Image (cartoon, rainbow, N blue to C red):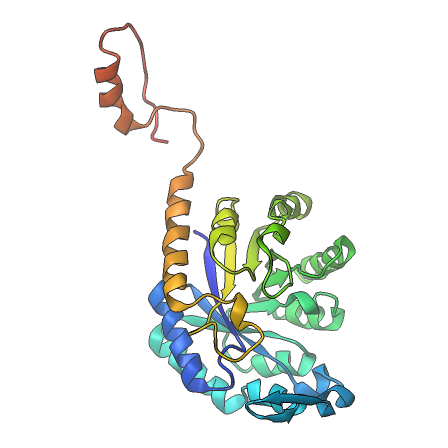
Length: 286
């Protein structure tokens, strides 16, 4: 199987199911494997003091109004679930609290995600691992001890997982990517490792694709100028099509690394070496 490409809608739908459906269409048309959302129980994730504090947004003048405006409930997720079935694309979501994870259990989802911010939330990790679904564990904002503990929890539960290298800045500066950490994680934990990118542009994601990642996640948007904190670090529809196409080409170009002559080179070698003595035995195609 090739690189598993996750189109992260997150909260870029701005609380509008119509926008969410357009983003699902964008992911499907670009050739992504799955779309992902985020789910929060506002009163559990944020303190009352924070929610009562001022913030101007399209939904009002408090943090609560903004946070609640961005959240989908049961009706919206039922509509998303049905729409994804019609479009033949899977969806899942990262839960930011226990109640949100329990909420997601009512849908027949194939995957789970531990967001970077939640990797230290052991009770949530244990609940997710108990479900036995393949889980993507983002490692942004983490020290080795945090990753150690997450891996321990999922191995103890015998739950399939992969780590995702991530730098949790929005947007991430290219020079902060630290892509060599992908190989370090793979060597240390002997598991699949993906990449969750928050950079502007596509070059860093291309580089990650050449490092043998198992999955690639990028935030997607209809327009980076839209309202929202994640929009600037997201990929627009044209860029997403370019990204997926290039990643598939990179996969094909990586080859096997075998030190043998390619079968397509044989007639060229015979022509260009006709004036010298040489021997070749073609055993397999590179």
